[in-house]
Image (tube, rainbow, N blue to C red; front, side):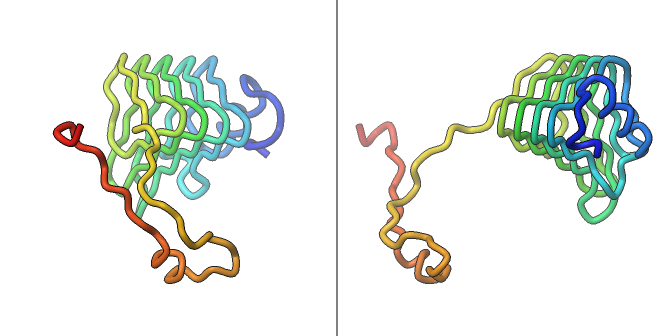
Length: 152
């Protein structure tokens, strides 16, 4: 219910508090945000942090870790923040995480993190349909060599 019910500033933060997540005042939790189901108590969200839609906060990989979003942090849509056992991933105060980023290490305060731009890596000669096997698909890929500065 905490993922889909309305109430980004009210009901969702309240429901996540009931689950064990530490949620500060003024926190915004967007639509379809996943906050760790196994270890919700390992997530801390400080005052006025904003978590955009379809973001995943996974506080465990082979055991619980800890994810901390500090005051005024902004996490864009479709971001994945993942923490392994016995580690802490801290998103610093006022930090901005751009859409689609994958975060596995702490981010300092007052910086912006953006994912690498997507790039073409291969030509597809065998379409990857439900009827195509993985070996057939892989055999039909033609890798594209990146253009190096000295090639120009």
